[in-house]
Image 1: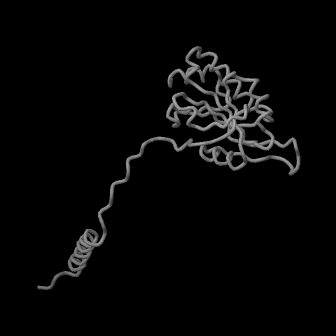
Image 2 (image 1 turned 90 degrees about the horizontal axis):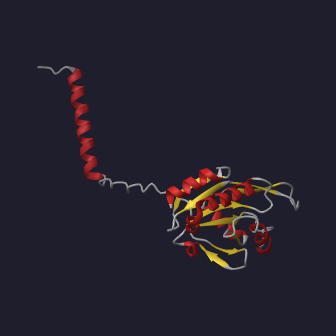
Length: 199
């Protein structure tokens, strides 16, 4: 009895599938499960910079307290002073709990933000504000770790250049890991309420 052509084709297709599945188990190693996602944002990392008193400071100096970090520069006309003032008012609103948060300002303009310049600038904000500067390479490294963008705006050689930059306030935990972030114009009340939830 002659087998209809369609059945012959179906038998060949089935045989090809079975051979393919068998070859997969023989020739291809078993897939390893993907590592479970931690859900942690890849923001932050070690740094070693110089504060407004000339002292060398590292991220390890702030272990045990939350860090409230903002990247900016002292010549910034509006965004930076707004963010730092909001941080100051929010910390004042926390009362004694504010001692568990260290406000940190990291310059992205180390050419102009010397130790002396940062000392004068930081005095306008929270008395515990730590203002940090460093070499160009050190600043680029810490900005990269915190996913912060910055770039000069203006003509080369112009002493009054501006710097375009990410304007985010980062809250890092006592272990140095990312907890949350806010915009530069998050109101002091909103910021204080958010900090209370994390302290």
